[in-house]
Image (tube, rainbow, N blue to C red; front, side, top):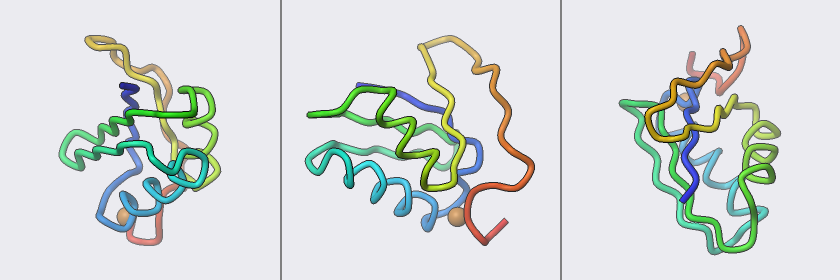
Length: 85
Ligand SMILES: [Cu+2]
């Protein structure tokens, strides 16, 4: 299980965009998004966290890898995510 903090994941549209991006590189990956905490948990089947991170970035979001208990240092871009913010 790989966990990212995606601060610019703000609504259901973001979740589906990100899920689609993940599934594009790993069709049977399990994706669990929590909008309240901006956490995205992925259970990859044929990708690694670097590939997942790249795919999420390509979809226009800013994933920060989270090791349990670690606060990610990376801040989101000024303008990113979907049209709803
Ligand atoms: Cu959104």
